[in-house]
Image 1 (cartoon, rainbow, N blue to C red):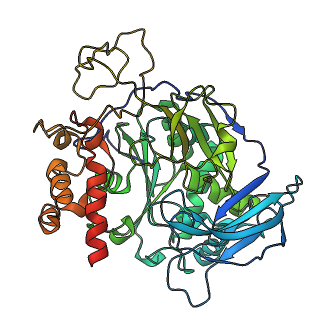
Image 2 (cartoon, one colour; image 1 turned 180 degrees about the horizontal axis):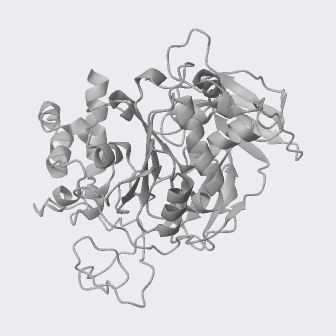
Image 3 (cartoon, rainbow, N blue to C red; image 1 turned 90 degrees about the vertical axis):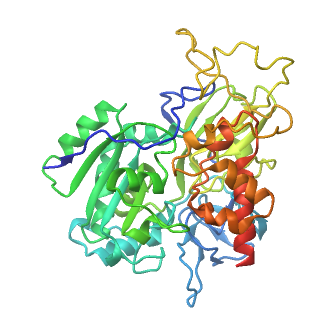
Length: 473
């Protein structure tokens, strides 16, 4: 039968409460079909691929529009059209995650005509290589922080090097509720999808990490996987950043990831709920990965919600007539993400949320202000029982101040680092000293900058230090 793990957690981290603008319990809705999509040919864990279409071509939903060159040695996955219509332009555009990427712009014809994948009559009898091919052609293998290994070079590792499949079903990012809702609404697809992923890896051991605040899902998983001794179900404390690969692998298996390394380097593949559902839809329904679930949330949003959104949809489509005030727009994570000034920035396969936050209001006496509706790491502000949602702003309250040596950043760091020193060394060009205290062990969760009372941009400093070292390497 399925093995039941004990309740687990990790040192550091932070429990986030419910923030104002969180789409708590909102059912998934289909976002309107966009009039145009902007599809970067770099999606998820994948190198940029070459366009297989040209300007003026008519394409259908699910048609491959980008694929790696035959002699390419970089991990990649095909990219698909997410609507049917005319390719109006192929050009370099800013990528939401930084840098530039060749992008295909498609104007919709409103018909949404599909090209489906060939579906096997009985996928349970397919060898791993054949399943891997279907997942690769569907674009599913681009998911996760290290891709999904197949013989088609969709990750740095190959399938025979993998011993464990880890399923991340614990959502700890503030505002990100869509994948949790997907788990509830598509539970059957999730369970069958994880079986497909396991089969594609040659029937490895599976470990599911699930938040202990989901007792109904836990009971259903036990019932559905009762007779499978290859599966271990772990209940986890929903503490941020439990869903990060490095933290999840260490919590579940006690294995440390190498610096600058991936889970695949230690024989693990980490996939989430979205990837399990996408695997089922690819193999059973013949549907390429052209749509994902996205939370539209934040304190500047009128009506928060969870949506099924086509890849390439401009974020402006999701925010249109839904902003109650000017705010800072962030894709994916309020702690790790980057502010987006371009409303044409597209949804990609790895975008879990579009978040709009109100700018912070300058306070005359910030320490003396009421704090009953604030999130506080130190416990300086006590929550009142009738205050359900915490107030969330960009927290940009003036210029950074000198470090007061409080040690809060050390307390929350899930990697047992000293972020204040890492930031200081990086900012002052002491890069070898920063490497000596494990700069590259930082997973860039952003908690250090979040709890810093001096508002020092520690995450930016650490990222800049890494960038300079890699440029000089």
